[in-house]
Image (cartoon, rainbow, N blue to C red; front, side):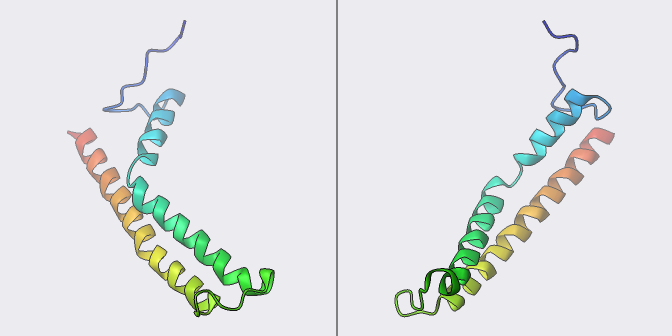
Length: 100
């Protein structure tokens, strides 16, 4: 049915399309939760920051939407940095493992 054998997930061959696809999938699965939470917080913060001008909301539980939006975006920043650092460490470990 298939011309090529299934990709080797322990050492993907990056010269083939299937190997690159397997490697991309593997990289997407590294540090999913911090990246996902960071993106959700960043999006929510941006939408709350825009709410006064877009919807005329000038207070959320007595707090300024601008302040809440900035706090949400600042909370997202460490999560996105942690996700990037974990992915970087994973790639370095994989490349070191592949070289052995």
